[in-house]
Length: 137
View 1: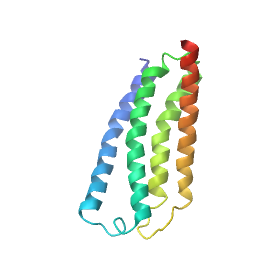
View 2: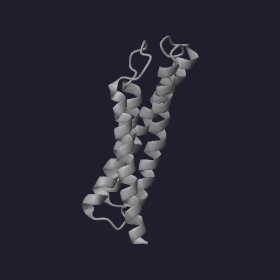
View 3: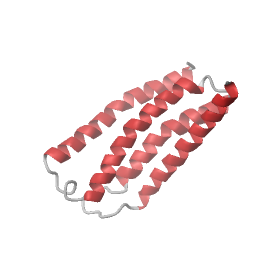
């Protein structure tokens, strides 16, 4: 594994406790029947989606690092893949959380666009990696 992949893997592993803290926060909201969470189904759904996507996409980013150095891609393309796939959980989760910060909000604000930006980043990174892996086979 390259130094760049190892460094990013280390950063992602350090970030995992923030996802755990998010889960703890959601559990507190549920068990304490937090106003603005339990009585706001849109906020509850988006917070749940933000937390779930963070966990799954960080795991996908870690798996990507196992493959990127074996792909038939140039150095710039490999860096792009690493960064695009690692950026996805940040953008997607931020979009879900920041689009419904207010407990009284009944619909997401404009920051929901971050979810789409994260999805685009993920798609671009995984397709680039897929092409590089097929070329390496």
